[in-house]
Amino acid sequence: MNREPVLIAALSGRALAASASRAGYRPVVVDCFGDADLATAPGDSCCLPAGVRAGFRRSPLIDALDNLQSRCTTPARGLILGTGFEDQPNLIARLADRYPILGSDADTIAAVKDPAVFFPLLKTLGIGYPETQLNPPNDASHWLRKRTGGSGGLHIRPCSAEGKARKHHYFQARVDGQAVSVLAVVGKGGTAFALSKQWCAPARRTPFRYGGAVSNIVIHPDHEGEILEAALAITEAAGLVGLASIDFIISSDEILCLEVNPRPGATLEVHDDEHGALFEAHLIACAGGDPADFLQNNWASHSAKAAAILYADQGPVTIEIDSWPDWVSDRPKPGTISALGQPLASVHAEAQTAEEAEQLCKARLAGLEKMLYDSKKGKE
Image (cartoon, rainbow, N blue to C red; front, top):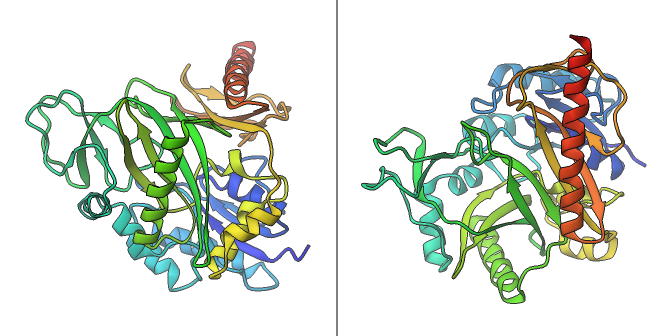
């Protein structure tokens, strides 16, 4: 293994770091959790405070990346940005002045996250989407308010009856149906796709909070064909590069596009293999190669995988355990204090079918929640 260093910055960088490590690279990571299972060597990661909405502050992030790079004996291949940058194109542009960005550039990210640009693009392409507008609807029922550049579902709220225009927000009609996410690896030579199902973990103030996802889903062939055709049109028209995801909803009578996340996302883990093929494919795509050809010859197929996030919904909790089941990742260090509603850890499951993997994953979520809160009670 060449262990070439690759810089990673994300609100949570553990999954990207794990994929990089499996692919034979040396992940050098800045994130805001610093979990115990972050796949880096000592000194190759920095835990930097950041807000889910505000993201990283420019100067501390640049200082942290520069410091980590200075410890590498060879220059890093470049910088991969995960969650936390979708609404900060100016920061991305500043980072690009210092490091090669391995992924979509600042202008591309700004365009696909701007509702005034993205939804007209969909209309031009003939791709359906829920009714969307920048001003609040006259009748707020069955409408949602979304924050421009938001991710993870935390920014989505039901539109209130007295809704009014808000800076950096837009309004979208609510559509019920099956949520399907398309993971894309986009290169000049070709593009690869994989489908997953997503679900929410609703809380009182965040009814659309991201819950989890499962791979190897089975949907109607006509729906799959329409989704993949739309995804290809979007990736080409938007000029995306490398790993990205496009979210759709299959309603009773149509397929609608909800958004694009122009960076590696949460479904990386349910599609990646034990050799980090998706990470390697991302680098190939960013170098102008054909990730589809690489994955066709190198990606190891597997049964259905599910991954979900456990949140501290029973109240604040101090982590008192240091021995975790092997199906848990994003493991907080002992003594970590998690506030109400904050992510505690991630749970994984694998089974022959998507339904079985999802059921097992959710059962493990309940088991881990009991373990953590029973541990808390035992200390009281």
